[in-house]
Image (cartoon, rainbow, N blue to C red):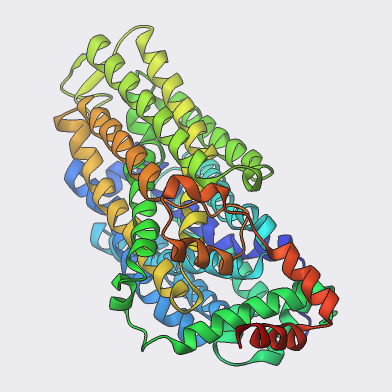
Length: 510
């Protein structure tokens, strides 16, 4: 059977899984301020709306926890097929929603899919991509999320001109189509060579590496060098004790697990949820209403897409640590700026445009400052934490723990996503501008945490990253460690193949 071999084509199709995540964000954020939605679902209050929005995150949490076990059992490719089917079922349930409970059920089921895809697409692409462009390839996942957000938001905006519940039913039904495309494309994807190696399917592993990195030539030195690294990683995995989730917290693994899970936690606590799920609320408090609010919100999604898309071309030239630290500092400044503008130039109101969930409004030129800071925040987020959070989590785990580790990291993301999606509407109702102070403090904390505990993974193969953690160097010194993959390619070319290199290694060890 024909197999796709171009890594960019594989990433383009594979990250449709990320687009599904984006679809589900906009499928709610675009509707929460519309008359059709509010009237059909009986004007949900801030607590109920928080629960509706967060229900997808609850499903995603469960899906992410299960994803690692599923992916290790049946493979990366088949786990994404299962996720695609789940998404189609959830979309059908959502489009037929008769009440809030029915809607929540559909969002929870869609969340199961997003939990699987958000963790395993990253694992799959990280295991397919060569180390020199891994950041760019895995970062396409975040870009796809943003395409999904924008496409669904614009489609929903168009559907707002349709009267009655048909408006949101059309939008929620159409979001099932990308999953059908992904499901069809996956039949022509190769399996992850590293997963094949973990199952001792070495001939298929070598053929897949040749397909991806050697134009079908298994004797290519680059293919042979990577094959050698995969074999070494699989050997170490075989020598490890029986794997379990608890092993992720063992003496040699806890630092990796802390890095993988905390980067996902901080990505949420940075405040991206405020910008993505509830931007309509933020702009209403800044004095925008109706269609002006909706297309002003769409501008934000365009900024998000452009910044992340542009960043993909240079992300493999800049250290992961640099991007995370600078992004956290800039976002901290923006949160405190928005809080200051809202506190000094705003005041309490009973409701905004009849929505009693919103109890604070900014007046005068300061409202434009809030909007400008929100746009800048989205740009900074798109350049830094949005792509790097997923890239870093997919890099820090060794082969034998990668699927479960990234699954646990994604579950952490979804646990905090759930908490914040539920927290933000009541926060805007009860503590208003102080909400931004909380996120600013989180940004300060993550800056310190990243500086002292996150090793640099940029420019190294997945197997070389294992060595970075094993050296136990202070995190801020790890950027000096350079990749030796090119030297290994030269050694393979000089000595004539994997077996000769392995034999030479055994002689040296004797």
